[in-house]
Image (cartoon, rainbow, N blue to C red; front, side, top):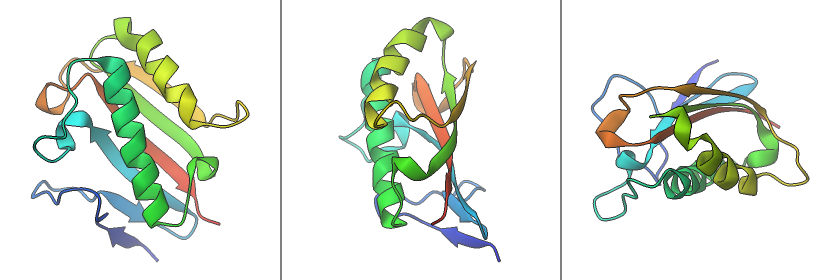
Length: 127
């Protein structure tokens, strides 16, 4: 059975996608960018800060689902430019314990929403 979930920690959108789709085994989180944050909370311009902010929001969404980063099996990171890889990577790795990282794809996507430099999506296994 497929369920659709709107996290309380994220603003609702009129865009034609769901923030979270849950199937029988996984929670699929749509891509999150720093420009998604409510007004006054956006952190734009620094890829390390954007990564930390996005991953903090991912942690909140996972928490609403009674999940954490140990449940994450796959992430996709889109960078406005691959020149920001090291800054993103340094911030990203701080969210996982004991060097247990999910499978990850990192690509260059020059036109991210709202002028963001980083977009992250993930898939977490349900307990």
